[in-house]
Length: 247
Image 1 (cartoon, rainbow, N blue to C red):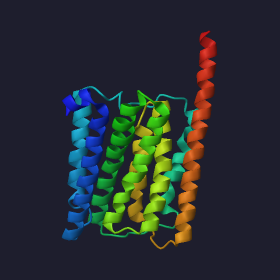
Image 2 (cartoon, rainbow, N blue to C red; image 1 turned 180 degrees about the vertical axis):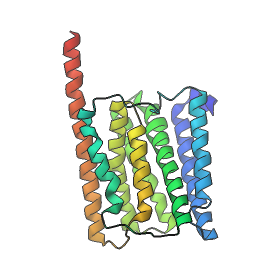
Image 3 (cartoon, one colour; image 1 turned 30 degrees about the horizontal axis):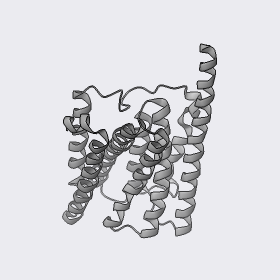
Image 4 (tube, rainbow, N blue to C red; image 1 turned 90 degrees about the vertical axis):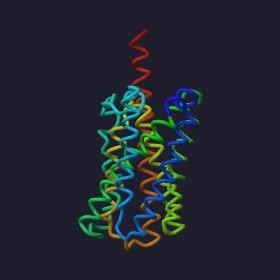
């Protein structure tokens, strides 16, 4: 893998993305056929996570892919308060136990790993591979591909309209996460938020109407895009001030 990484980082990132999407879908299907939620997905996600961590550690790429402390003025990022709102989305209709305690634990473990894996491969590998040539294009593609990645939910029996709404707000959140990583040089806020959003979905009350789903998707899109634009504006002001000070 390191040879591919050195030869072509973009192809390297695409290999990881394709392998992840295919294996996760396969693991979910097998888990469902066995009748236990995430029974195969959880160990698969753990292995995938360890492989990524091992690669990053072996070749000293922690700083490159944002597995380091956040580097930015928290005031300019509103102390990440909007991320708390995004994290709570699956609890807006209430809280319930949808499955057994064992399956809940397997789900949370899987989703925590998924938050890490997706942030590293979409925001880390893919974004970093493209941003060397065109930063705006890299932000756009990283965000869109992250959103489109959720189309696999159709294969797992999800409703078409619900999936399309998820693709839209996932792309908006992907845009926000990319901006946070680009400006703050750390993926940790994104990984924590992503993992928490995924994990808390197991406690969601699934009785919302289509209109409720549309409103939720709209709120997530508005909050994510507005927050990302705020970060861009505030960090641009700071960069201009630092530039003047250097003169």
